[in-house]
Image (cartoon, rainbow, N blue to C red):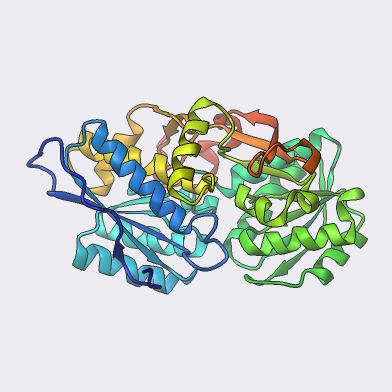
Length: 400
């Protein structure tokens, strides 16, 4: 049974292939995310399953120590997230915290983990400030960030001469960062922001926001939100017929969001993602394994990111022979990681994990062959082009 805000050991202890005296007998990884709210489908319990799979695969690849996966719901409240993490580290000996979907929570946890000298695997914290002005030597940001998503989308839209934008944005850290980062690229390429409006987390009625966007005459209506809010916005945009005259761009959209919307309403929606289960043989194999364990649901980019980042962390702990966060992150930076799901991953001085990003267009119902046959690939953006240049983030750790 799942309990809100309670840290639960959800994976059996995995047998160690051999013991290393320098490491604790059990390395504990806490999966902190939204288990019941607007981001539950993107991360939630599926992220816990992904972390379990990473722990099992680590053991199968040689292991070196026992691994325990814990989980808790931060309720999308930074103070709750901080309370959980302090208890985890101080009382339960947790060595790393992963996922942490929600930028506000992620920024708060980032500080705590640095104070504790433990690793923050910020798998799904969207704000690019995490590897900018708030960067820490104990943090790696894995799957995506607002700069990469906004940059990728802006370049794709400008390539189609869609050069005027209107934003409908979350009124919290993620929405602000998405709007800031994408508009900077848009304006730099010669585009223009003609207006914006903000909405609170958990909005159900987008009619007034959509009407404002529609009447603006912007060629692109950019949704700088995600989860349940984005789902509601896209469904209502379809009712208004917006996509027939304006491009609807989801700056932070995942496959479960499109599934909830349905292809009839979502068709033509343009999205950016770091992962899609049907990209290649490796992603399809992982997608099948995951679906067998999680109710025939394919992994989201968030959940795939948890698997890859936790597995990379465990191997880095083994190689560094320590759980100290600074040393583990330094180990991750030593050489590129050949990851089955994200391809070649390079961890930079600022903690940003760099890999390819993708632009997709949602298929029409007539184009889809099955429930999860959702995207058409529009472009693959190399990581060095997708993510913010190292010298532009303002990270104090960058030395050259």
